[in-house]
Amino acid sequence: MKILWILPYLPWPMTSGGKTRQFHLLRTLSERGHRITLLVQSKTEADAATRAALEPWLERLILVPRRPLKHPVTLLAGLFAPWPLLTTVNGVSRPLRERFDSLLQEPWDVIQVEHSYSLQPYLQPLRRAGRDFVLTEHNLESSLGGATYDRFPTWASLFVRYDQWRCRQWERKAFDAARQVVAVTESDARAMRQLTRTPVEVVVNGVDSRSFAEVSADPQSQRVLFVGNYEYAPNLDAVQWMLDEIFPRVWSHCPEARLAVAGYALPANWPERWPDSRIEWVGFVPDLPDLQRRCALFIAPLRHGGGSKLKVLEAMAAGLPLVSTAQGASGLAIRPEEHYLAGDNAQALADAVIRLLSEPTLATQLAGAARLYARQHHDWAVAGDELEQIYRTLPSTQEHPACV
Image (cartoon, rainbow, N blue to C red; front, side, top):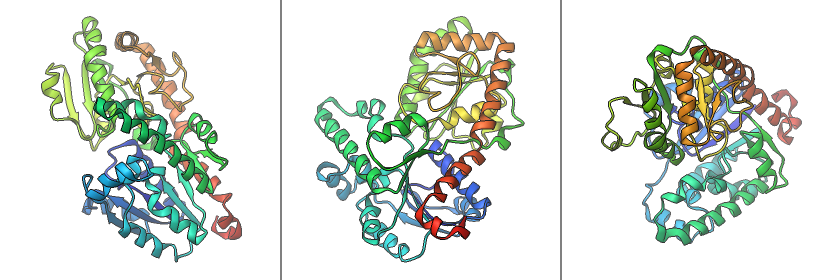
C-alpha cells in the first residue's frame, strides 16, 4: 500500500511512548513492503542521526517546522478559537496546510493521521477532496486532565473548564470525520464509541521482543527502575509521589534499596529537591536494555494518564518484575499475583517493592509470566497485523486488492 502517515512530532529519538509506537509501526509496515511518506510538523529539526534512523523505512520524509509555543497566533487562537489549546498549538498552520494540499493531489491507499489534536490543518482539505482517513487516538485527551490542568494556577480554573469542553467537542468532530478510529486499548475504544458512530478498533501498543530477549533482572542490585518522558505530566506526578511518599516507606525496611530515575527531559531541580544518595538521576538512556539488566525490578506508580504504557511493556519484555498501580497496568490483560504486584496507595506500593526485593523466587516467577505475555500479545508484529487488517477494510484498498 501507498501510505501517507501524518505526525505532530518526529518519532526519533524514541524519547516517549508515542514516539516509540510510531517508529516501530513505521518500521514494521515498511518491512512488509508498504511505501510510506511521513509528513511531520515538528518543533525540532531532523538532524543527521534522526534522518539515518527514519529514512530507511520511508519513501519520503517531509518536515514542516512548528511555530514557537508563545507565538501570537498560538496565544490568540488558544484563547478565542473553537479548538482546544493542544490543537491550536499543533494547528492553524498555513505552510502545513499548503504542503498537505499538494500531497492530496497524489493517489494514496491510506491516509493515517496520528492524534486528534494534530488534525486541524488537514480536516478541511480532506473534506474538500472527499478523501477518507484513519485517525489514531493514543489517549482520550478530554479524560486526561487530572495531572495536566491541575498545574494551571487557581485563577485559570474558568479557562480550564472551557478548554476541557472544547476538547470534548473537538474529539467528537474529529472522530465523526474519520473513516476509521484506532484506539490503543479496549477500554479507550469503548469510551470513544460513546462519542461517535465511526467504527473504533484497537491496535495494541507493542514491544520489540527481540531487543529485550537477552535481558534479565539483577536481584542483587536492589535497584528499582522508573522510566518516563518528563514533558508528560503523569510521569512528573509519579516521580513526586514515589519520592515524597512511597520510597521513604521502602527505605524504612530496605535501607539499601536504590531508585534509578531515567528518561527524557529530567527536571534540573530534582537532585536538589531530593538529595538522597540512593536516588540515581539517570536521564535519557539510548541503550535501555543495558540499564534494565542492572536493575532488580520496575515500578509504575502512575495515577493519571490513559492507554497502555510502553515503558511497562518494555520492562515486562526484559524480564523485570513489576510493581504497578491499576493505571500503570491499564490496557494490559495482566493479573496481580500472576504477572505483577499491584498497589494503588503509597503503603501498598512500598510493601510490593519490599516484597519483591526480599523474595527473589516470587520475583523470578512473576517476571517470567510477564515476559511471556508481552512476547505473545504485544510484539510489534501483532500490532502490525491489527493495523493491516483495518487497512484492508478501507474502500481504497478494496478497490485495489493488489495493494494488500
